[in-house]
Amino acid sequence: MTTALVLGAGFGGLGAARALAGAPTDVVLVDRHDYHTFQPLLYQVATAALDPETVGHPVRALVDDQGNLRFHQATVTGIDLGSRQVSFAETAALSYDHLVVALGAGVDYFGVRGAAEHAFPLYTLEDAVRLKDHMLGRFEASEDAGAAGPGALDVVVVGGGPTGVETAGALAEWYRHELERDYPHLPVGDAAITLVERGGRLLEMFPNEIGAYAQRELERRGVVVRLGTEVTAVTPSGATVGPGDQLSAQTLVWAAGLQASPLAQALGVELDHGRASVAEDLSLAAHPEVFVVGDIALVASGRGAGPLPQLGSVALQAGEHAGRSIARRAHGEPTEAFHYRDKGTMATIGRGAAVVELPGGHHLTGRLAWLAWGAVHLALLTGGDSRASTLVDWAWMFFTHDRPSRVTVGAAEEDEELGDLRGRGSTA
Ligand SMILES: Cc1cc2nc3c(=O)[nH]c(=O)nc-3n(C[C@H](O)[C@H](O)[C@H](O)COP(=O)(O)OP(=O)(O)OC[C@H]3O[C@@H](n4cnc5c(N)ncnc54)[C@H](O)[C@@H]3O)c2cc1C
Image 1 (cartoon, helix red, strand yellow):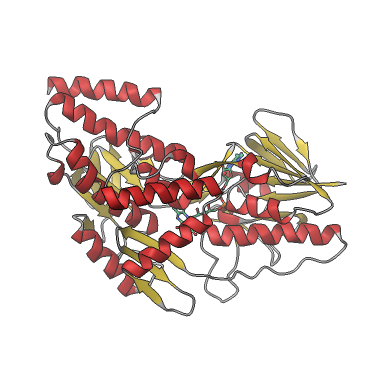
Image 2 (cartoon, protein in one colour):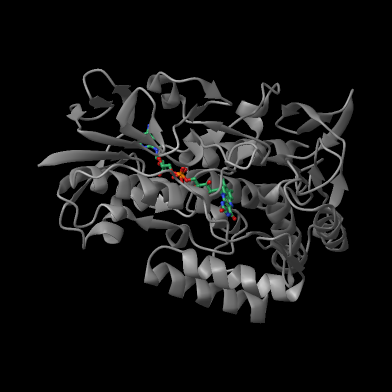
């Protein structure tokens, strides 16, 4: 029996592993976490709308019905294509006959001074929980001090793509409804939520009118949108934008850039923004036994329109294709070229406002788009129990304007920070 090693239990890795169900090969699925992260809803964890468990689903529960699969929780530290071995931080190396690399991407701060130390990225479940705990910590510290210090309640969101737009919209609604009610003695209504975008418009990958719609809807919710504005430095108390303008905010969310996993460097191919170039069937040209899928891969769109975007739908379809290719090989059949089926792209701005771009250039905005967004995300969520609890939380929030998840169970590090802040607040 051959062994297929699948690195990463994100959309790409899970797609590959599931497509290998019933194939005459042992499948070992590896991830450093024991849960699969549904990244599209991370901003809802960060804004207390959903519990972390809804967005992080146990990997074992997702694959326990697949007889030829074993899950291995470990951190990949190296890939040796020559000896066909993968090494791990915690356990012994594993050998493979076929390898699927689906290790995703992380945040890119583009070298902006102070960003790595002080900005809050939104790429992992830990990021989302840390951001929520940090913001609630600022509110509690202000409440203890009897006043909000400069920028204590203000937030800057960097990046006007879907993540930045969705986060800014969700923050505005959280502030206006629950936080104003929870902290009646604080000037929550005066807090600034500023969305900063370097380019000239929001949602660059959508048509112009959709970007303009998103901007109008955000501004209607009280978000200050600053286009053509570049963040050049970040400190714990704010950001420098442009040549030297200061924005005061003790919370800065970084939603501006992605960098493929550094393990792409082990794949011996040219990298573009850290992404590994692959052949038509998603394998490496010099190593047909290795497939690379998802955010870590650079896949030509085949229409002269540049590479396919780093999206969950692309990763899932590419993973499934890689899994099917390995199964075909096991049956002595050749692999086929990968063709992405675009089923549309969407982003939500807030209650009753979303944008959907359908294949063929048609688009929807407003309430209908918002309902479509909700239905699609519920359908895509992994695990029936996640789906059910998300539906209950969303319905509860819709009817009561009450968020179920605004408690901090957080990190010791955050508690220390909170202690510091309280000290600062009381002497101010
Ligand atoms: C905030 C946010 C919102 C998004 N919204 C949307 C959306 O609305 N629609 C959409 O289509 N796409 C969206 N995306 C993009 C989408 O989530 C990604 O394109 C998709 O997750 C990529 O899948 P992947 O399998 O390549 O990587 P991932 O899903 O990131 O999975 C990679 C896996 O590899 C594991 N891993 C990484 N390094 C190691 C290591 N060294 N050892 C072991 N395991 C490791 C990680 O733990 C992770 O489980 C969003 C992304 C973000 C961050």
